[in-house]
Each structure stands twice: as C-alpha cells, then as structure tokens.
Length: 218
Image 1: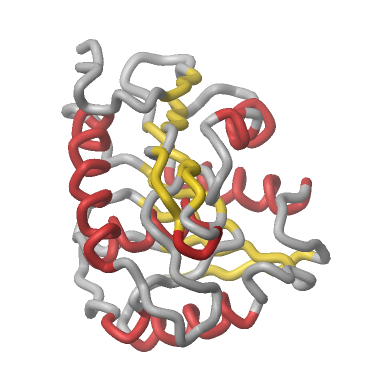
Image 2 (image 1 turned 45 degrees about the vertical axis):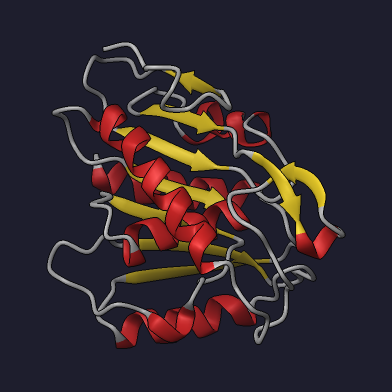
C-alpha cells in the first residue's frame, strides 16, 4: 500500500528487503542531521537485505539549545545536562506522528524494529517505552533515556533494547548509557549494552554487533 504523503511530508528514504513482507527497521537521525546520515547503515548492517529499512526526516523546528535556530529535530532540546528541562509535549506529539508511520510500515506483518542515533535514539526509546508503541526491539545508538524519572514498568510485550555507546563520547557521555541501563533493568526491561572506543559516532564493530542482534530477531 503506497504511503500517503500526508503521513510523512518531511520525506523518507527506503531500502527494500529481498522478500515481500520482510521485517522493517526504522532509524531516526540525530539532531540537526537528516535521513541521508544513517542510510548507508542498511547495506553495511544487512547486506543480505533480510530487512526492509526506512529513514525518515525529522521536521524542521527552532531548537532552544542552539539559539532557536531552525534545524531538523524530533523535539526541542533545552540543554544537554542531566538536570535540564525536557520537551515532554514535543516528545508526545512526535511519538503520535511516528506511530502512524510505523503502523503503516508494519501493515499486517511483524512489528517494526525502531531505533536511531543520538536524539533519534532517545525519540525511539520514548516512542516504545513511554508512548507504548509495540516495537519488536529498540536500537539506541549513542543516545540517552528521555524522561528518565518516569520510566514505565515493563510488560511481557515490552521490546528488548540494544544500546551502543562510545567510551569517549563528549556530547552524550557514556554515563548516560550506564544510568539508563540501571533504570531500565530495575523496571524490568531486557537491555544489552555495548561500549566502543569512539566518540559521538558509529564504528564498524558496533555495526557488526547490531547485525548480530538484528539477526536474532529475524
């Protein structure tokens, strides 16, 4: 079924799977980036095309932490510190929009695997955990846990979380992953954490580990 352009007018890139009905992986880019930034991951992580991949653009909006300069962002950001205020309303609104897109992509097939890098990973965590979207799994790549003081208790349907993070990340320190792991585990979520000698980026070993994780779901 063709995608109604009203569902996602910001645009998206797709990489089809080798078979009709292949499970879908949706990856959300980071703050100020675009759908092209992560699109190369599809061929690197899944050269056999066992999955269908989707890369949507975030809307363009003013971002407070960058002096209200307009850029692609899933929600507003007021600061990067652990005590900074968070855009709970923006997260909720975007999760609702993403839900419509994800439902379309899942169709009658298996649930979508949802993930992203940095802010995109945080948006994915919120959508699956707080908004309750029934994702097959969540991929948090150099991300952080939004609204961490209000983590919902896991249910039997809660998705497993794959979390990868750089040990030298100066944007989102690896302590963000450690805090999230403790909070999520205490709330009953299955979380696998992976550390790499890198900054706020991606690396080959991370993509290989991500591939292994995805293939356990296929």
